[in-house]
Each structure stands twice: as C-alpha cells, then as structure tokens.
Length: 110
Image (tube, rainbow, N blue to C red; front, top):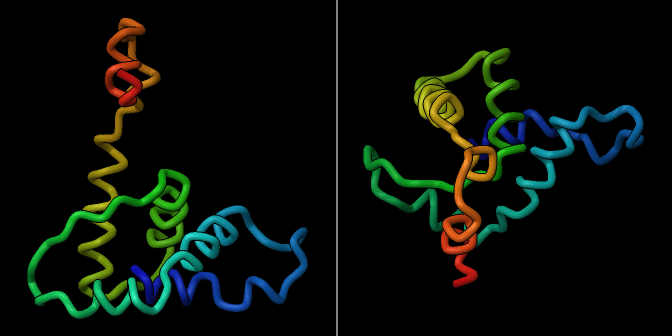
C-alpha cells in the first residue's frame, strides 16, 4: 500500500493546488502520516501474516479507485481485494436507524 501511495502521489506537492485531484490530495496527506518509524515497524513484521489496518474512509475510497486503474503486483492485488471487500461490506452506523441512547453508548460518551 505504501509503495502504491508513493507512486500515485509522486510530485503532487510541486503542482499548484488547482491542478491536483482530490484523490491525490487525500492519499498524499495520509502518506505523510507514515513516518520512518511507523513504516519500519510494518515492514519488519513476519511475511504471510495478515494484519488489521484502519484506513480513513476517504483514503480507502481514493486507493480503491486508483488501484482499479493501475497495474498491480500480487500483494497489491490481494490488498485491493481486501479493500474491495471492506468497502462493499461497509455500513455507516450513523446512517442506520438507532435509538439515540445506542449511538451515544457506541461513541463512548457513556
């Protein structure tokens, strides 16, 4: 994912804001949060083990759109498949009918 983000956002900061797509801006801002230490931790994990990663919804949608149009390696295709499943199964808890007490409890306010 990180390598795809790097390639997709390469040079975006050198272009004027008006010439940048929202997808590239969203992905570039997310990539900026991955500092060297965080990246080192993720790349030093054992191979062939699945990990859970929380990605903000705008980043997930941007990645999903860009990855569908790109040539992908095996691991990137696997990631796209998992991303596609997550987006397909996503249900916004605030869009569903809930009693207000249930929403407050879910948000951790109680």
